[in-house]
Image (cartoon, rainbow, N blue to C red):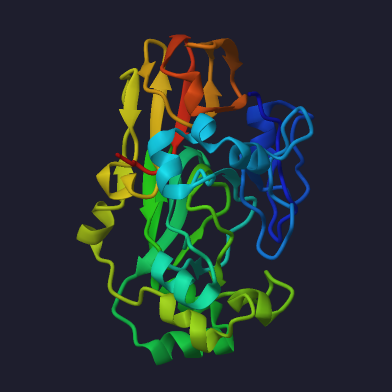
Length: 332
């Protein structure tokens, strides 16, 4: 099923790169930096904002819940019920994002009433000509009191300065485990995969959010700062999560085994043979045809699609380059 842009209002600027990919007039550029593609997840505290609506007027979330085995397959639905367990976004950082992190599953279950935390990964698809900056992981071990003081004082320079600055370019990927503090720099355009929540602990809330409460989601910083990874991330540790995965194979695994328990992503090209799976497709370049047991669809640059597991195996023809986003790896 072809999907239109789905860009809930955000607190930060962006959207022009989404419009450039999708085509002029097919995306919002006024504080629409995130396109929630094939989303069954709502924005934090909202009833429907963030959800994808299908052409028949039904929420994708409800369609999946009504027939989970058709959409998700027997193994996945046996474990997760009617939840795809993945959220895909196009994210266009029109400005630098604040320093923030996300809770783990265990922390979210214990403190936030959520089954899922928010481990995520970034597939870099656009940057300024000389590369873009992302800020990830503290350069030195830090005490809880140090981080708490920075947050209380909203010491932006200290928080940002304590992080590693890494230059990324198209073709790079970054796996971001829960708890890892990070900020995406202006001009970086990504396909983001994440666990299906909108849980963010925003350490640097001033000049970004309306209030301090938005930074700790109403739970209090005395609670949520315990989810922050304050350990040292040196060059060797960073090499484990920042990768370059550009090649010309028909199917390229972009995120590797560390991510597979949370989500998976492939770069696919003409000639690819794909297994049956619920999947979200983001077409980055060219055009082609995807053929499944239930028919075929023409795919062009900027298109986004959701495919149910019941569509079966597929093949890809043409000059298409796309990102195929998949749920966690599950076996019976």
